[in-house]
Amino acid sequence: MNDLVAAGILGLVQGLTEFLPVSSTAHLILASSALGLDPERFGLSFDVALHLGTALAVLLYFAPTWIALAADALGGRWRMPALVIVGTLPAAIAGALLQSTVETTLRSPLWIVAGLAAGSAVFVVAERVGTQRRRAEALSFGEALFMGGAQAIALLPGISRSGITISAGLARGLARADATRFSFLLATPVILGASAKTLLDARRAEALFARPDVLAVGFAVSFVAGLAAVAFLIRFLRLHSLGWFVAYRLVLAALVIVALLAGYPV
Image 1: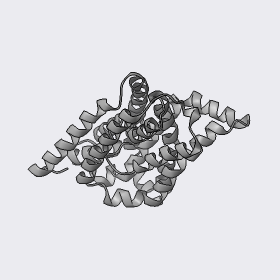
Image 2: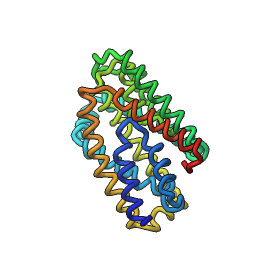
Image 3: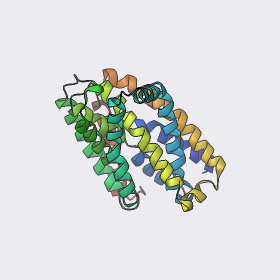
Image 4: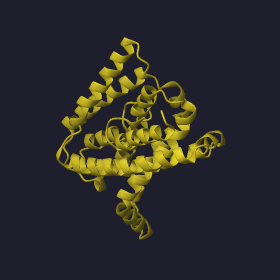
């Protein structure tokens, strides 16, 4: 397959699944395997371009919110900015300490199946127990840390960063719209930080910039698709539950199992 076409496909997969609660990591692993892509050209290094595209998408979509948070901080109103900072810490620390281990040992199809199934169960429970009466501004710092801890679990493939963090917010009584908005605020610094960490690795950076055309296509497509996905999810979850994504996740898990039993490469 032409590298530029492959870059476009992976950019589309990343952009659509980074913010939808279906696990972008799982989809990228499965798509790369199904397309038979060379991991030297489309492995972890290429993921950086895709994540930077989706990070720019969520930054742009929530630009007014980030400007308001900056204004609050400059005006001495630190509570909401501090909640975001505290909520970001668990995933940032977990990523720094465990990301390499996760990337090398937990990318097998069985881990993906387990993550898809476990995440689906969490979605169902969170929707049932959540009162959905609170605003994000009412969170305590302990609750922000709880949501951040949930985001850290999304290092495991199949879990979904947005899904697990929104579920944690629902479990603490947040309205679904507030849980969704706060989860995206927590995700943005983590996505940017993970991309920057990889870029600083000289060995990966060299591989990344070897094909700037491939990098540009992946980045551009993931940005456009990511912007569309975050706009869709914000609107969708105002009226619908996470349960709508459970069936898709379980069907995908079942298809992976069937493929493994049939001897197809996954």
